[in-house]
Length: 264
Image (cartoon, rainbow, N blue to C red; front, side, top):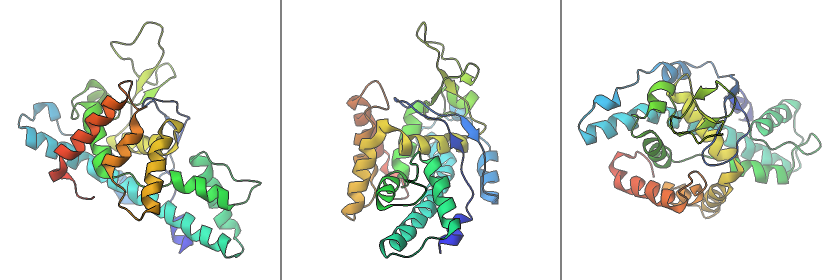
């Protein structure tokens, strides 16, 4: 039912993005009230630097971040189901109630796809459904491991930033020690690892730099295929200045660590 989906309150509303994994600080926090959020934000962070055994470190790292990835995908699945049900109503000529329209407007604002003349249209659904879709855990967790040095980077330890996300207001994060002269960006800090994961999801699903990834994912949907991380990684060449070498590295990590994945 659409109304059960609408009970899920909003995620963080995030500021606009540019490219290369740059981000987004929290503008407003309006979480749902379930206990899962509290557990995700209060989970004790392992000291990854102290874990010597490679397999143990990998398992601990993936287990620490996986609940946040699962939670975000569950949220997105509910939002997507709402959109699909509403799209079916529009296609069949049914009238749309004010509550559904208001929720659509909120979703559109969050995903940066404004309603056309304050109404839902088939064109609006087409754009939204490309953005409101899941990201496979193997892709998310591999990028987190790569960007954070398996949770050992300064930005992960001090700022709960696992994806190299940037911000641009003075004092918004941590100043990189090797920042180029004249540069003003900082590396964003988050109150919890969960919020870093949430920001990453919104980055990839909204940022125009990753439209290719969303196109690949939409094609997988049309073909009835599993949303699969190795293929989606092809759309991440703009996440790093290294371009396709970065893509190759993420794909290699996904393949090399396949024993740790629970899906796909």
